[in-house]
Length: 115
Image (tube, rainbow, N blue to C red; front, side, top):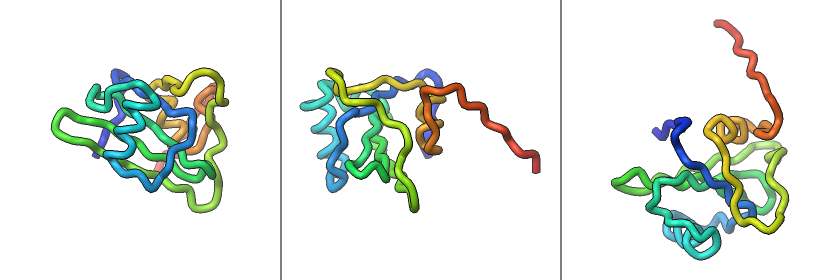
């Protein structure tokens, strides 16, 4: 299990990725397109072209983790617009908001229900 902590450096790839790629293919995208070292410890976040899935790639010092989330009915509502940058930095709480299909750029407040 991967725990996202505030100390993690998170880079979101703005351009959609080919989700047929696995660890080696996405690590290559990190090097060639994002100009980042996949062994750096950064958390790299990719989205597919339809916007229905995310892949998260991270190196933990021993090996790579590759996680995927695919929405069953919707598309991810927020993604940065394509500008000049290939990457968009995120904070840990923003990545958590994105994973839950929220908008990390808004001040979202979670209301937790007591059980």
